[in-house]
Image 1 (spheres, rainbow, N blue to C red):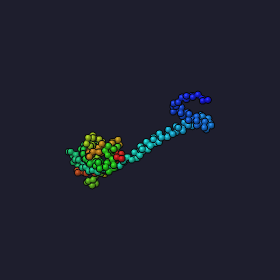
Image 2: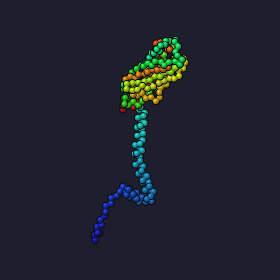
Image 3: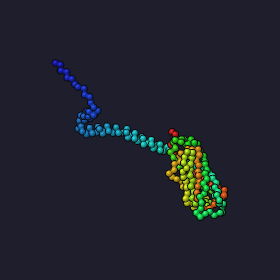
Image 4: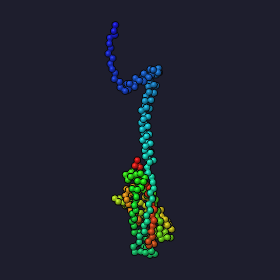
Length: 232
């Protein structure tokens, strides 16, 4: 005698229901309690899901570290000369008024050669992060035997095409008998927009207590520090 046909409904399982079924089947096969195995099942599943995420986050941090390590950090030296200007109405040996006078400012321009340097180090203007004055010194080149006793303080301002004049370095305390001045750079000044121009202009100003020797020539040595990202 044939058994009556019994229609079996097709169950549409959710992902959660399917997972519970797999856990129960796994528990039945193992012949143990469902709860510990169920917990173990989901712990393994969570580990499998979290592992790729952890690897992705790790790779992002690694890439960032590589990028920082690849930054270009180089010193770029410049040298220029300038003559100390005459003081109108005064000559060497003539006493100045009490308290001294301001030294007439003098401006000198020098080529940055920025395109050459950026090409040499494999970077470009839009990849430059910062350019700062690392150091600047001034030495009396001629006449021989002179010192900076005539100078009370000095300021050097920088400008470039399309860029405002800014105070780049200064020195407010001049030791007596000095033949070389090591000036103090402005640590917060970023000159990247100046460096990428063809020419940087330096305007030298100061205050004097005596008239310097006529025709005194100064040698200015500066070191700029370039930080940039590479093109590749």
